Image 1 (cartoon, rainbow, N blue to C red):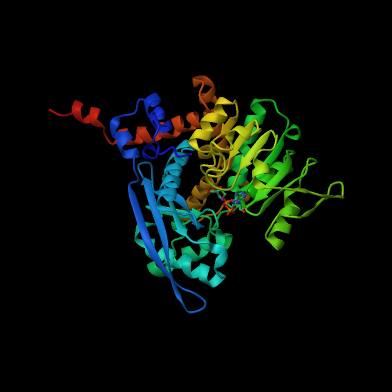
Image 2: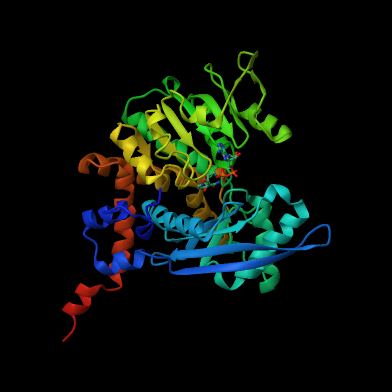
Length: 433
Ligand code: NAD
């Protein structure tokens, strides 16, 4: 969903409608209209066959009014300056929605990591940190994992930064392995946070988990942990997809053996599913990824990439609730069509904030030099995302607006207040003699 001010052609844009509702100062509108800082870097990597390949990467720091900027690093062939900028804007809003003392940033490299060897991937990860070293740090901009990057990649990046600085600076990056200053609970944080938001909705609507059938698009870090925890909480996961295909079983799927199978074979297709609780072997049906999106389920979870639902497929969506774990999985036009059709969309800037919430906890622990148990981390995560979600549900109800609008009102309101604290036109006019 391109909600950044300058990306929309139709007037008034979504973000302008938020500015108008909040009656924010012109200064705030101008400052939020574009990223504060954009870096494009070239990363030369020596390949295993001796050749040299130069990759293109970006780091965009969108806004740092509320604190150092924070955002993941994505390795994907579709990464572009525009994509990274959009993602950095959403990070800015997200950190404010859940009231973290962070601004928003994002990074990425245009690469298909599946075509690289492990050693090439390590050289690329280290090369990226060498290229952006001067722009990042615990008080300036703190990277984290995103699509196709994980704790191991974060560990390489932290080590490269430490080698350049000639000292350990664990708080410069989050999502690190536990042994290198990572936080307990970080790996599952995004999925856990998303489930918390769904649970709160279900509670408010008096819906029992076992009555809700869920389809999950995207079975990576975020989608898998969500599916695993939702299954454990009693929800029925009837379908799962990844970049190669989708599987469906009306009786419900157990995500754990599916994850293990995927890690062995790298795909979901043709998998034999065994429900350990009843020890029945059943063959999950294969679907196309598009068929999964169009299933008649109660909740459709989008945990892959941007623009999964656009104006072409929006009218075929039958789910009553959409849980946006991915960033921007529903385009603006599709958002409008679905909302008009009465579909409840629980928005990305709230739903997937669990990752950055635990990243913040990791950053705090690194700075304190003291580490918390998984239980403590999970309790703090649940508290923070629960409070933000309740505030959004209440605002949506009171102001009769969508959950996306409510979340943006919360987030932009906090950013606007911080910017206004630095003085706006009104302040300077009132104090000039
Ligand atoms: P990941 O790389 O671990 O997983 C992505 C998954 O999507 C993979 O299983 C891939 O096969 C699947 N996929 C790709 N294209 C697909 C398609 N067309 N249909 C179905 N599946 C497809 O990435 P991730 O970390 O799980 O992130 C997923 C999304 O969640 C991204 O949008 C990311 O920005 C967002 N997110 C992740 C985190 C986090 O902590 N991991 C935090 C916030 C937001």
